Length: 200
Image (spheres, rainbow, N blue to C red):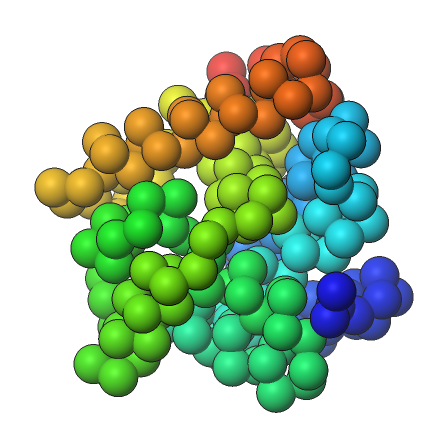
């Protein structure tokens, strides 16, 4: 896969944090840890690759405060570096439901950028890594791991809901069920502190 080393991955996030600090940085680290933990128990996934993809899924936020735009910014940034598989995750991680209108938040992309996202997610088949990061993105708050319900409601309270919100939630739970069938246990068994974070 076309991805950076773990050392370079951490350098990229550190640099991004100096450009635009905020809770998104800790969220990225925890998303990576959740991905690694789940991948370690999954027969088809490499835990190091999962960790790197989770670490960089929000790297587009290095350019400052944005909504949907961070998806394209991350994709362009990593594509220019030659890390196409990480760039892919930047575009797919927000769309467990393959519909541009399901995004939670404002669409601050240009018409051309929106069309890029729409075309990209409609033309590819999601890999297990795509779905893993979609899942882990919904399991990690900046303060720790939590139940999907807490994270999904938190996002809804901050960014609002739309006609596709419930369908997107259902897609996320379907991904959770899919991974649990493969690993043979609850994903929450692999997320230390999930109870404490959920009931903060």
